[in-house]
Image (cartoon, rainbow, N blue to C red):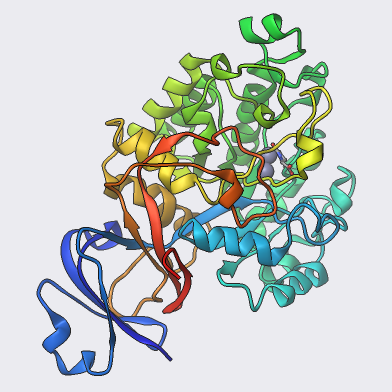
Length: 431
Ligand code: DOR
Ligand code: ZN
Ligand code: ZN
């Protein structure tokens, strides 16, 4: 097992209140020592490979609660392996794949099968099980059994469970099993064939729009039903100002509700959609500048606890179509840290430590895993990044099969240079 001494870097470890120059010694897959001055002299560092991290930042590996690997069923879009490699390149050492594959991950056997397929992946893969069998909105899955098999949450992502009575029943069963429920909030009866945000831009482009309320009414419903069921609720990809306000209200009531935002939703507004281009299409859609600002304020105020990507790879041809035809979704694993760092930290909304809390510490807490912590004895899942050199996002360099991003060419700071999972280098910019 490799042993590394990472020297002279700046350690950001919010779980242990560390934001300073530290050396970190890793061995046997774990953090062995963290010290303010050179542990190179300590006996335990004998034989370690030295990594000089001068000028670089060391952070716990990111935990992404919301990704789409397309295996089984849509391997031309992404496989478990290519998705995991994209995660490693983005500094993400734990990913939770959504169950909307074909077949759907909707049983203990499917959860175990996915975990088996993922066991040699370069990052940790913790599956999310479906809420209803086949995501057909009729029969509730074996929630306790899927938990037993290793699922960390349940979700119907891609859609909501529209039957409120059935969803209530699922929340009660999830509460009983101690399983968090991840909600994709969307009332499809309010969609009206929409493919982008409803507003001046959709009018200008002559495309059908999706109103904010399509999201907000389900956010409100799910909060109220989770309150009644006493269930842990996590709101996926919040995109509207009212989602933020409703989450704030839930938190003020002391409910066990968390909320995530994705980099695209707090970075780009529908104003920036230049043409009818499938790369700008995702669900929920890019909203108004007022919504974008509300999300950034919500992140700053701690109402939004988590940043996840909703990494949704699709084939190049599928996305090179009008928004009327292209599937919903953009990739995110390889750009989430850079975009979030550039927009939120350099933009003055968060400190780097607060950003790492939202990308690592808080998501780990939602699913109750011992990650996002670099204290001695913890798993050596960590990232070394350069935050001072500007570069351009270039989708042709993505290792994900999906190149579908509206951020190609964006100038950003925050480049992951090395990623370690359980003390092993799983990504190295320089090799
Ligand atoms: O944009 C999206 N893409 N939103 C979803 O809810 C599903 C996802 C996908 O699976 O492609
Ligand atoms: Zn979704
Ligand atoms: Zn999703």
